[in-house]
Image (cartoon, rainbow, N blue to C red; front, top):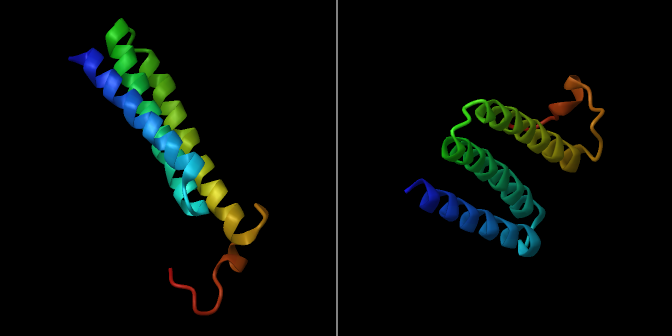
Length: 97
């Protein structure tokens, strides 16, 4: 059962790679990278359970945090074309919060 779960996760990760390479817009590709990272975290947890090493879950949690920060940084970069934007500049007139 666990092995089947790992295989299904790998299959869904390959679908995310296809979406990443083909994906018509930039935001589709960013979403595919984020989804791939989430599935990687799940795969690491399943793999840790398969080999009986619970300390690998810590690595999966660290990877999840890095995936979240990287996604926010990528979206911020593509919106402002720089990562160095002051907080006062992020809200423009007419922007919704």
